[in-house]
Amino acid sequence: MSKAYFRRLKLSIKEEGIFGINFCFSLLLLPVQAIIAFFLWTQGLGPMQIGGFSANRMVLYYIFQNILMITYQSALYVAYEVSNDISSGNIIVWLFRPISYAKLKYAEKFGFFILRMAVGYLSFIIFSVILKQNISIIQYFLSLACTIIGFTLLFQIQLLIGLLAFRLKNVLQLRDFVMDILWILGGTLLPLDFFPVFLRDFLQYTVIPLVYYLPGKILLTQLSTVETWVIFASAISRIVVYSLLIKLLWRLDSMKANQGA
Image (cartoon, helix red, strand yellow):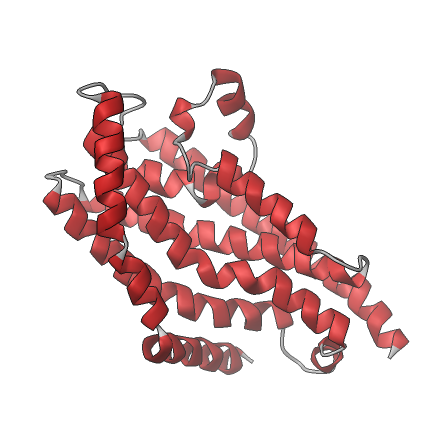
């Protein structure tokens, strides 16, 4: 069974390598976005620092958020694809196969993600050199691990929403609402350090900062060892919980679909 997942992973990497022209064009926009962010934040912050972010670090943070959105793109289609499989009846095929639909879907999306992540981080390193910002290798590795976790959580959230199509007619509005919350409160527009204290305190108990904000925060600011361990422990525990929820939803609702077939 593991060979099937590995084959799907290899196939998606190959497809992204061949048809990744849109991804390359997306990266070409980063210099323009960097210039806009630079003038915006140097005018706004000047020599000030907020939450460990100087103006140049804010520019890098903004660039990194755009890289994340490009890198995470394959996960953003999951809810639609899963709900479409359910509504069209194609999901029935997977009920009789000795492989996990969720794991196969993850392998497929992870293949696109891993190639984009490699190119995205390489692009980020180039921008950090241009802006003369020293970032340690440890920060890169920790951020890389956090980005993989963030992608996994985003995939799981999308998959859970997609599986709700067994019970709901249309899940796309729910998906759009959840993604709006992630984008607005998840640090893509502003780091959480700029938010009011009460809102930051509330968000730290949710999954929201783990997807976009914390991979950038870990990359661009120095966190203590305790803070880093708490972040990773919280993220991994959520992955475990979401995995159990996915299995539960699949077992309950796919059985009903099987009986209906």
